[in-house]
Image (cartoon, rainbow, N blue to C red):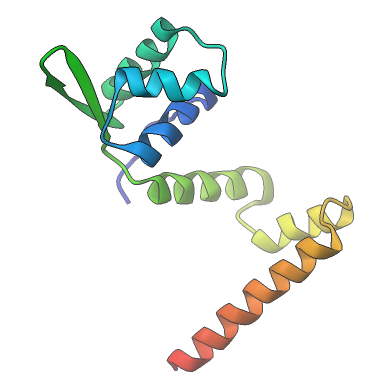
Length: 130
């Protein structure tokens, strides 16, 4: 996998909007983020510019409007960040993370049932592919 740039929490919020609605204009990004944040239009424009400089976004100028498109897929970025999180906090061991959540009572019975269903479905699919 190619090296992906670091994205701050604030930049990630901008990226989530772009991933969901791309191609999207500056004004549309500002409008969507104004529903969930108190950032000024100038702050959002600055973050868009940073993301372009990092190579995460590209843009086209359509008369006086900038229209943004992501250069990386959301799934690709999430996968990289998930691996980074697991490596940093749990030495790459997913089971250690799940055990920590269980030990800290952070998983409800519904969460556990849902995880079991996901795992059972994955096992059944894998066994069917053999």
